[in-house]
Amino acid sequence: MPKMFLFLIGLSGTLFPLSALSEPTEITSPHNYQNVGALLNDIEQIRRVLGKRPPRERSFELHDAVPRQVFFQAQTLFRKCNTLAQEMAVVSREAPSPAPDRVIVSADVYGMLNDARQQLSYVKDALGITAETDAPAIQRRREPADVMHAIIAASYVLNRLTSSGPDWPQIYDRITLIMSYVGGTLPAEKRYPELRPFECCKMPQDVFDALNGAYNQAREVAAENDIGFVRIVPGKAAEGGASTSTVYDMTSILITDFAEMTLAMDGDEIDPPVYPRPARILPSHAYQLAQALSDQIARLPLE
Image 1 (tube, rainbow, N blue to C red):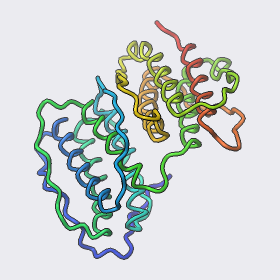
Image 2 (image 1 turned 180 degrees about the horizontal axis):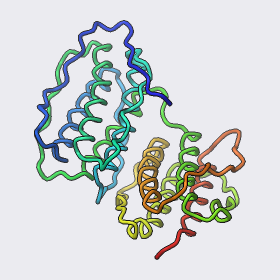
Image 3 (image 1 turned 180 degrees about the vertical axis):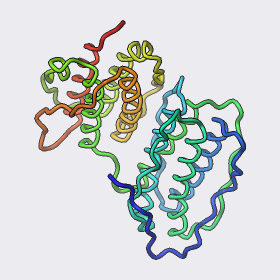
Image 4 (image 1 turned 60 degrees about the vertical axis):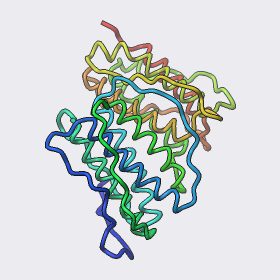
């Protein structure tokens, strides 16, 4: 989809100032963590004005992330900020800046977070919010995994503020995209397995667990190709388990890492699998695809 130019309707032209964050000479993960903290403060202002309840807490830990993975999660965050800006400030749809054609570094993440905060400034201006938010103190020991965790936490709140969040057809299509990455590394006759029998009544948590299982299943192949996967350590399950948005954010992690892994494996660009598409896509259909992804990963060669 081509990037659209931002178009503001009915705004005063004087945008709300962001909290003061002077850009450092060399940007590191602590600076990105501070920037996400400022963004979370912006979101909290908006949430209170809109009278929305905060989301339920989700307990998990992330380890071993790198700036590449954080950047793509920040792209997802930007899209959600833009969606809120479309709904609240009548801006047009805008795509995030593409990934640079080189190794992604912390400065790229910083720029994407600034872009996301700019979208929030349009929302604040439209809502008449005039108080600046404080920039949190920098925490020197923060790592990329901490930044990624904070970005996902911000995404959870944004999901509460927008009227249109991720849905199961989007998740279904994202899993087929991941399968096309994996399939490009396999012989034509082994690319796509048959679907396992359909299992009724699956919940988002079941899909999350199946995707996380497939992700861990590919970890050894990724390591052999010098690609590091994030370690996701689930904590105490939130009431009701994972949400649809949680599963969507999980697919963001898989897309970037499987794309990187299969690129290192010299995978071909191929069409996604053509399975019969349900008229109404439910979590059980996404679970069935996640099972197929697991069967597909089992076919990957190990040296």
